Image 1 (spheres, rainbow, N blue to C red):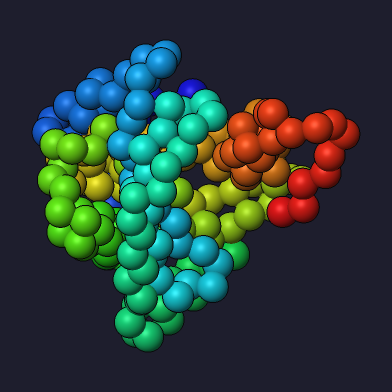
Image 2 (cartoon, rainbow, N blue to C red):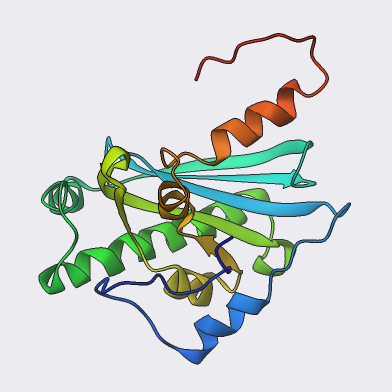
Length: 196
């Protein structure tokens, strides 16, 4: 499992190394039987914007939807992201990586404001980042974004890099879909099929 808020390995531009951000790394440690408020962030390959959703969950079976928001990317930023597709980011891309992270922080702030919550009410943020390269059959996947910067900006622990961890373990880079489907289907009659 990826340590929450931990910096990604590798040479990704724009990585924050502040002590404040790293303090968030040890702030989230799941406990069995406890309910958590979690914000999930997603920015897909359409490059249309960032989605943020707030749920309450026990982390295994139960999930209650609370609120969601979508913040569209401006066309100029979308064009900068598009130029990163198909390759790892280089030093000249650091500003785009930071802007992506800050747009995710803005989505979190907007979501909290819209549902009347504060950072202290949230246990964890799941940060997918923006996929710019994905070849799981070759063991390659690259997501940009800075989890430590996001944790520092939001004041909430961040779990990141789960797609790369899944590919490194031999998966296709979508580790949550089967877990979610298994939890939903736990009490359903078997056999059954889930189409994603």
